[in-house]
Length: 358
Image (cartoon, rainbow, N blue to C red; front, side, top):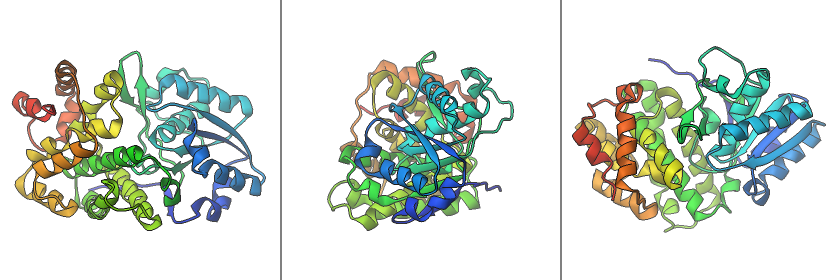
């Protein structure tokens, strides 16, 4: 068994303010990588800037991170950071800014390297990095993974280097004003992380400890996810914590078949990542060992995989061209590393069923 989690994580109200000294201790000039508007609307950017000013730390804001950030965006952020003399990076927002921040921290530390270095396996360090999530899905604040859009390949591909943030600051208040669509898609992404970590050849006692705690908490949040209950401050914090547990889970096991299937759908059809990966969860779980499947369903509160699939599709329906689904399936069937993480044999017949989401 193995367990590795080098990120210091704090989760509480007014988290940035309470841990401002630790945030500021990462360097003298921060490159804040964020999206175009959400961190301004929810107040998280103002909180970060106030924390840095309190400790006389300079900062530069890079707010051009798009959804599913590209290699080109990372290199633009790298250039901005090098140009202003930043010596540490803060990722602020959803999974996209956090993933971009990881890759930029790597490329700023290795400034002489071209973009292709992100996809080389040679050992390398990154600049100090803080991650501050404002959505409840990716768990990027506690993983070493950064997934970037590769326009040359027309899909999304993980950076080869593992870049764990030094510190993660989690505050549910930033979720309170998020659009329902964001809450739904990111919460489904978190559920996907938990299911794929549970149904995984790398699962062990340590990862199960986190997975089943996360599934149980996710089940407690169902009414807030489907909109039948008003999102309270306490519920928002629980959703954020569930996302982090899900992130810790995939940090130990990696993701499997549904995530790999989702990338082409997001790139070619513009389907949000959470919805795309959620579309394959019930069928992926359907073929798992009976006891394992029952344990997952019981923990999260569904009677069977059909009920799980109906719940996900009612919140995040996905329609995709069959040819695109088949192309994605063919690509995954050639990816032996992903197939090896699935604890049952993925035949062409099983794969055909998994992608039958229409």
